[in-house]
Image (cartoon, rainbow, N blue to C red; front, side):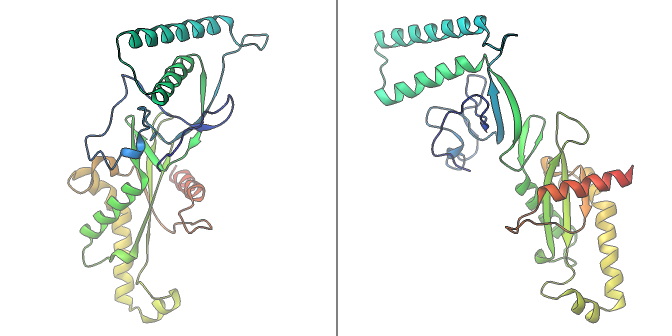
Length: 266
């Protein structure tokens, strides 16, 4: 989501983690307009999607480490000297912009002496290999792949896909867990379905579900043309997608479903 303003958090207060520096990217190679809201006017990247809080390092007596404070002051003094040198060489900026950049540099200096703690995510993403992949995009890719693989057997309205990330194989990387919900015929209730469906249609439908459940993962893993590498699931489940009061997929319920599925597999 776009961020229109930034408000600094106090120690212990959860907030969005942002980053800036020479070792960070300046932007995306794709359309700059598409990702414009992911960068602040002074160069901070806002799209990590992680909620964290910070605490200052403490000594045994519960006070902020004196050495850290001295180092922080030295960093601040260095930043101030650099600013004076810039002004002397004529590289002046507008007052408001200058104040923002000064505050950002001081924040960066202080940030080196803070302990950060991860809380949760603000966005639905799967993190693999240090990259963030949108759960919504993965769901769209899988839905389109199913439509291509089972053309004539499945309609777009019969497929719902929900993607979540879970720490299963590693504590340092997400596993991509996908739930696919299939409905027999759009617009028909369950009882009407049973009444109008012939035995042959029922057998074909169950065979289709079994084929997806048993073979879909192996197909997309073997054939790289079917799905982008980032959208290939680690685990797939065919079943009902639980929703919350807003009608959106319920991530907590989906995680419980996958946990039960993996437990039964063991």
